[in-house]
Length: 307
Image (cartoon, rainbow, N blue to C red; front, side, top):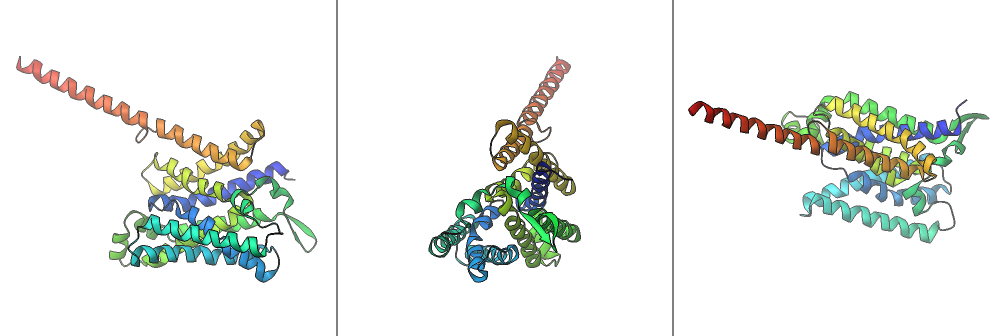
């Protein structure tokens, strides 16, 4: 029998691993904030799905949010390519506009129901054990665990089946195009997994924590390795330890679980940033001192030879 604590930790782990795997490719492509843009821009899709179905059914909302997630990616790319606007600027224009439209739709048509900005932004992972899926009278456990489990399976399947293509595309899109790889399909496939991961996750943990888990664990792992498979494994590892450690940190200080998980991702990054043997601040400083000492010894040895 899994306890409430167990369900919360399982949910956190599923979110962390799902986000870390797809977030790794966002970090490599220098598109880290696309997850943030998607997490805000899908709000109109959620509201429209609610208005059309007159209920908070999960799958219609996922479909509505997914459509707007891909629309966000497409519109950002189009503005960047055809509007002579930098990619980051076009991203900011699109997601702020769509998010504002979602806020207006909520205030006009859904102001009296439990679908608001705070629910989307902050979430509450502590409520997961009571959001149950009852199938034919049988308690199947928390609904978010099933949804996030399916998302994780989809992400793993996509990455393993497209591993070589994703690797080439992430490090050199020009090379991928030269080799005849379907770059557009790869790009929108990746953005699709990011969209559905973000959408499936933020109902439970909130958009802010989703963005943290998309970016910080992969960025932390990036300081430790140059190998893609190790980068993916390390990203998942840092996500898992953040989810577990964040829960117990929140319990210890009596604070928000999502906030504690996000803080722990930042603490892990700070430690690796300082202590990473190859790319850490102290590691680079130490290597610089070693090189300086080696050069100084070489000069002294040469001077001694010529004396």
